[in-house]
Image (tube, rainbow, N blue to C red; front, side):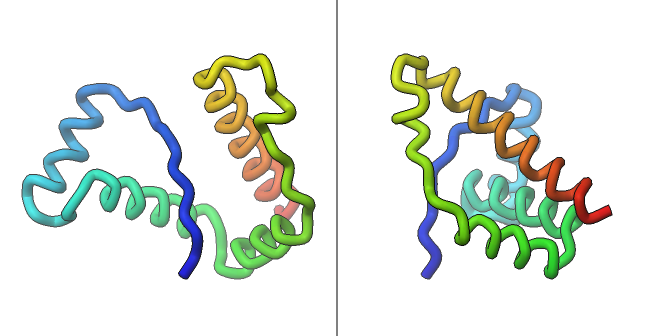
Length: 99
């Protein structure tokens, strides 16, 4: 089984209401399930299976970096934002290099 990681995402009340409606209707059993489905759909509309395999192979080839060591005196929310931006930039770069 793949390991999982927890992330924090800030959403507006309107967005939360829409997401909660999927749970309330019984289509999904939890908000986590709704978010997971949305992220999976996003990835599979942006990347081919081959792209995903290349990204995963590239990630496993690189040495893991402990972000906490790099950002010792940074507030928790600032670290979350930095990681989010880094991930977005990484994905954007990978997608542009494939074009």
